[in-house]
Image (cartoon, rainbow, N blue to C red; front, side, top):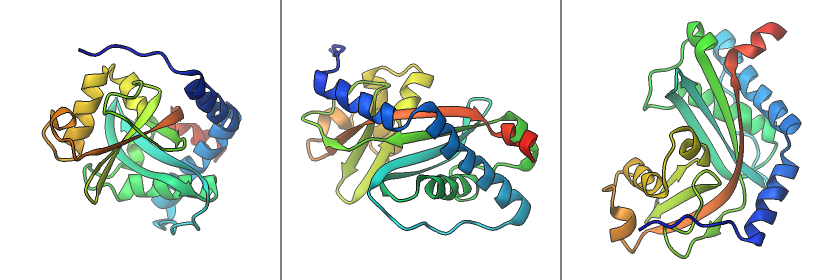
Amino acid sequence: MFISCNPSSKEMQINAKLKESYNTDRLKGILQSARESIFHVWNDGQMPILPPLGENEGLAVRLTVHGKDRGCLAWYKNTGDMNLFAAFCAAHALRGDPRYDPLRPEEAGDTLVELLIFGKWEDMSTPEDFIPGSHNLWLADGPENTILQASIAVQRHHTKKDFLEKICVKAGLDKNAWSENKDLVWRRSAAVWITEPLSQIINKK
């Protein structure tokens, strides 16, 4: 049985602090760097190099076309300059995600770009110790790590069980591994995100 839980006051403070730090204007500015990076790759063929690491939160850039994933790259903690990391992740989501066919310039008008910020990662007492849509999940299976963004739970109407099964399958495990494999390590983090059309940049060029 899955019982919905209410966030504790500590969780609410963590979420509020992250949202305050990454307000809408700041998110839009970082997302713009991701957009520009995609067009630079299309126009010049140049991929950005990995920026210097730092102590900032992590981020992910995800590309979708008509609701279907077409590329994603996450740097889930210790970023440096957030604009540079957004540009790096966007370029590699565009060209370096082997799960999908590379996004083409003629698809720009149908593409959405999602920027998600990962808050501080916390160990979880059980796999069920999270709130779908509020927490990102990090599943560690020995040396292998798998991340699933909170935004996916909202967009695809995932229950807690759905989300746990989804991350297990993404990790190459049986969908019920979350309840059967006690050696798995689970972490969670608060999330904020924004999604905007990729083509919005066209008006500025």
